[in-house]
Image: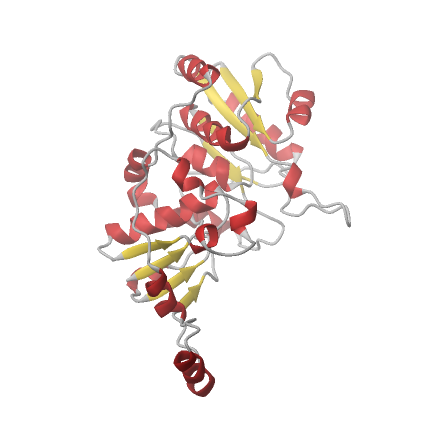
Length: 298
């Protein structure tokens, strides 16, 4: 059995679910561990919801408390506490320590802890994921109406994530907001290759989006908030092409886009702390257009 720890918001939860599906595809007995949302005190349980439950009847197996306890060796029974004191912990956790760790597919009886966000893990099961990951019907008629409009035009999503990527303490950017040069280059790249593109802007800072993207073929989508935010991902997936932020949310919007001729653009580096060289990122994200902070296209 392989147990996968689930954590983070919807985009990260989908990565962990996708790894579950990949392991099942390879014939492994995989389970998801939902402890962070169901039992833990503080952390994700207080800050976030298990948004996988918001999707339309997504199916997966969940590990039991006994199975988790066995893999993490964290039983508080006196005998187990004494044994750990004498012989050490029998923890079976494998931590994510690189962008791509194909060795996990040869493992068994391990507890996987990480985000597992490399596209290379999932390229062979993307059609299956697109089939299984489905959104509930929105109660807001604007979403249904916009999807109908998008179906008849060259719709392009642009995701701009700002608010939770800023820090006030030192003025530096926490994750590194995608630069104006990145977005300008991405828009130029699409415009040069797509006839009459129509850009739909999705952002947690709609005032900024309106102030900076006000051309006639640009429209800010601002009505999906709270639990309804997942419909922004759905709308992204209905666009023909996608310009992503350094955010798993819009990466999944692009990944769930079934257009075989889509242009999917993402930042070369996901955050300020990523140091992978260009060739490594290209190998791990085949088929994606990569653009760096200065606007250079790879």
